[in-house]
Length: 75
Image (cartoon, rainbow, N blue to C red; front, side, top):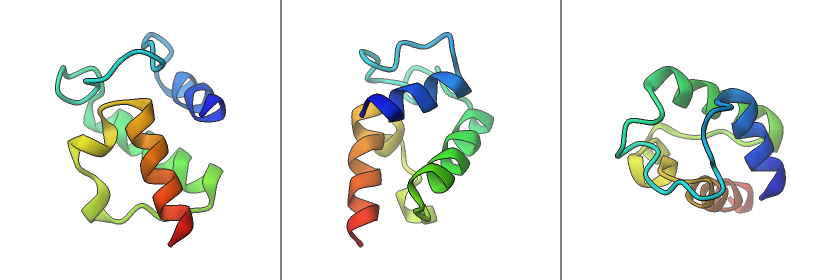
């Protein structure tokens, strides 16, 4: 989880990813940020995030992103 937060902070350094739980709902992340996150996660964790996983629930917090990564790594 710590690695993920570090990765997210490199993309958007003005967000507290440890506590924020409405990254999408509150408009903190825009579509460009999301594309950068998807690309970084794909590279860092050797996964492929399908379009069906690109929903607000999976991107609203570092925890939800982490859960998605773990789920995709298991598949």
